[in-house]
Image 1 (cartoon, rainbow, N blue to C red):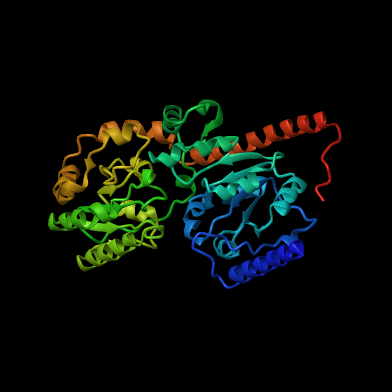
Image 2: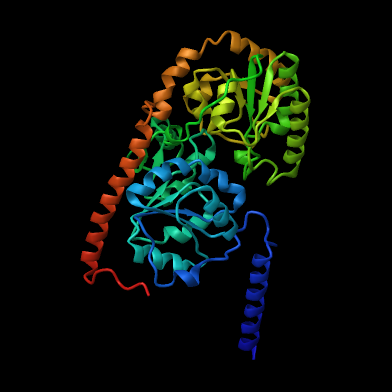
Length: 416
């Protein structure tokens, strides 16, 4: 009788879970798990590369940063994006011309990767749900992440779960060697630059605001106290008010995840948007990053990947100091070189920005750091390194998998 009762409880929980997923009542950030599993039974994926993205729509910006390079990789090796969330998959199908499937069950995922002869599995973050795909031993697993920064997440111990990591440049390797123990960064990291800088070129318009302009691009509040870098609540309003009072134009580029974890950041975002709009500035939510860069003479930002992307502009930057005493960074040369702004100094942001725009004493030193952070930035060179790295690792996978099969003595088993 107890066994029958437990079985009934499991069926009730299963039915309840299905209803929650079907009607979109899941907590934020949780994939709905509505998969194509039944339709995929016995099938194989086209191509050699899988991008595994189990996240919800909130985090889709992370994958968007790789759309361009993946579009270039697809005709060469064949790419399929695998999701765990049907809403994310639906959005992807409207945004990128690459096959997308949704898989809810680990068994389906494991079998289709093996059956398809998938050579590479790529990941754009360290979501714990990545472990579902990491179970596969027939493919090489590569961490791409979605930016190079001095955040502690860049040196997470989770990097050890992946066979290789594609990093922007030598700075990333040095950062990992310095802050991550028992990890052989030179052997496991492959510098590819920022391929999206080659593929995501857009035609920018001539700026309409004649004033010198500051781009304020804070990061989000972070997933834990050690990564709480956002200046939005601690610096934002006072700093931007001082920029406006200094006679400078403002572009405010909010982070897509602002307020997702801490509602107060959403409130600060709304206040800042109102201030910027009433001052004649720009709130940039749907403009290309390149347009914001083209329209700005200086960037005010937090510890984030935007610092490296800004570096090739040659223009000055100010990086905020986190106000949370528990925050930690994985600092490299740029963080030590750049002017820093603490919360207590927020009211001086306008005068400091104007001074740096008019007199930029650190320009040459920053220019010298470009290759250290991004490698060769000659147009097309980063994309070429990315494509070559994928090709080379695919060849290595074939060699390693053939050796494993030979040792096992019976060839590839039937996953069904």
